[in-house]
View 1 (cartoon, rainbow, N blue to C red):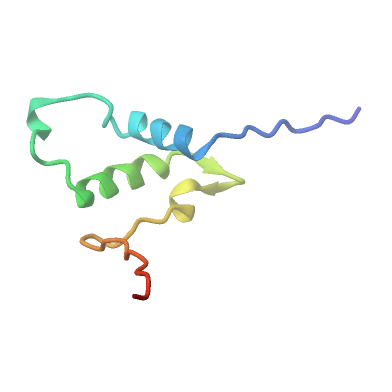
View 2 (cartoon, rainbow, N blue to C red):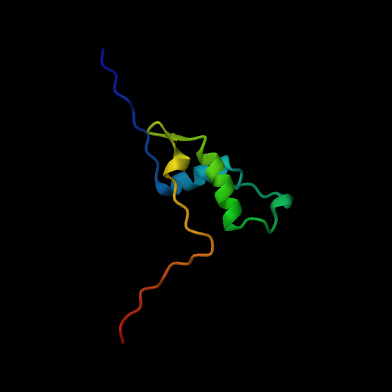
Length: 79
Protein backbone atom coordinates (compact mmCIF):
# COMPACT_ATOMS: atom_id res chain seq x y z
CA UNK A 1 0.00 0.00 0.00
CA UNK A 2 1.23 3.49 -0.83
CA UNK A 3 0.71 6.23 1.74
CA UNK A 4 0.97 9.84 0.72
CA UNK A 5 2.47 12.29 3.15
CA UNK A 6 0.20 15.15 3.98
CA UNK A 7 1.91 18.51 3.71
CA UNK A 8 0.84 21.02 6.27
CA UNK A 9 1.03 24.58 5.05
CA UNK A 10 0.89 27.75 7.06
CA UNK A 11 0.90 31.37 5.99
CA UNK A 12 3.61 33.75 7.14
CA UNK A 13 1.03 35.52 9.28
CA UNK A 14 0.05 32.21 10.88
CA UNK A 15 3.69 31.28 11.43
CA UNK A 16 4.34 34.53 13.28
CA UNK A 17 1.33 33.93 15.52
CA UNK A 18 2.42 30.34 16.13
CA UNK A 19 5.97 31.37 17.12
CA UNK A 20 4.66 34.15 19.37
CA UNK A 21 2.48 31.58 21.17
CA UNK A 22 5.38 29.15 21.58
CA UNK A 23 7.59 31.94 22.93
CA UNK A 24 4.79 33.14 25.26
CA UNK A 25 4.77 36.62 23.71
CA UNK A 26 1.00 36.47 23.30
CA UNK A 27 0.63 36.89 27.08
CA UNK A 28 1.25 40.07 29.00
CA UNK A 29 3.35 39.65 32.11
CA UNK A 30 4.40 42.47 34.43
CA UNK A 31 8.00 41.17 34.51
CA UNK A 32 8.39 41.81 30.76
CA UNK A 33 7.01 45.36 30.82
CA UNK A 34 9.33 47.62 28.85
CA UNK A 35 11.66 44.72 27.95
CA UNK A 36 10.18 43.61 24.63
CA UNK A 37 12.77 44.98 22.26
CA UNK A 38 14.04 43.44 19.02
CA UNK A 39 16.89 41.56 20.71
CA UNK A 40 14.61 39.94 23.29
CA UNK A 41 12.05 39.02 20.63
CA UNK A 42 14.75 37.47 18.47
CA UNK A 43 16.14 35.45 21.39
CA UNK A 44 12.80 33.95 22.41
CA UNK A 45 11.42 33.47 18.89
CA UNK A 46 14.63 31.67 17.86
CA UNK A 47 14.40 29.42 20.91
CA UNK A 48 10.77 28.62 20.02
CA UNK A 49 11.73 27.98 16.39
CA UNK A 50 14.27 25.33 17.49
CA UNK A 51 11.28 23.24 18.64
CA UNK A 52 9.61 23.30 15.20
CA UNK A 53 10.79 21.12 12.33
CA UNK A 54 10.36 22.21 8.70
CA UNK A 55 11.33 19.56 6.16
CA UNK A 56 13.41 17.72 8.79
CA UNK A 57 15.38 20.87 9.66
CA UNK A 58 14.80 23.06 12.73
CA UNK A 59 12.84 26.13 11.69
CA UNK A 60 15.42 28.30 13.48
CA UNK A 61 17.92 27.47 10.73
CA UNK A 62 15.55 28.94 8.14
CA UNK A 63 14.58 32.12 9.97
CA UNK A 64 15.88 35.54 9.04
CA UNK A 65 15.93 38.48 11.41
CA UNK A 66 16.88 41.97 10.35
CA UNK A 67 19.87 43.43 12.16
CA UNK A 68 18.97 45.30 15.33
CA UNK A 69 18.74 49.01 14.66
CA UNK A 70 18.44 48.65 10.91
CA UNK A 71 15.61 50.47 9.23
CA UNK A 72 14.26 49.86 5.75
CA UNK A 73 15.40 52.37 3.18
CA UNK A 74 12.78 54.33 1.36
CA UNK A 75 12.95 54.62 -2.36
CA UNK A 76 13.32 58.25 -3.36
CA UNK A 77 12.00 59.69 -6.58
CA UNK A 78 14.31 61.77 -8.69
CA UNK A 79 13.25 65.40 -8.72
